[in-house]
Length: 160
Image 1 (cartoon, one colour):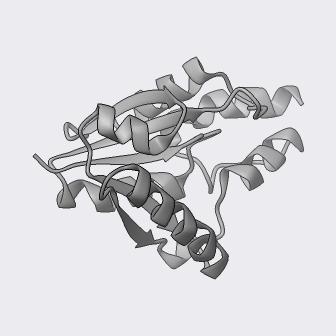
Image 2 (image 1 turned 45 degrees about the vertical axis):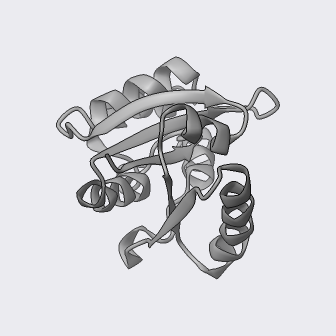
């Protein structure tokens, strides 16, 4: 069975993330969208909320599993028997950063391969960081997040 992991913080999940997962699904028997938990990183949304949103967004994708992990991504991949990592690339800076991480993961994960999917142009400008700034600034994030989570985000945005 070909299993892949798409790791991230998904704080919040964006349309760019969704696009990458939908393009990865046909390539694998199973794709796990896994939230990496880093206690040193301040998140806007709780782990529970982010897991709930991922479940909602991918509810109709039987090949997509939702999970979370702490520690090294390569160790998590070994635990869930995944030989592939999925990473989205928006620009050349993403590639430079992800290439190094990919090489480290390959060494730590005993031949864990990273599959890079280049973002479609209409999603290349979207990042969770930018979406968080927009939410904190009270801006409309409709063009950037999945419809399944938009209502909850709009409630938060209007309270800012």
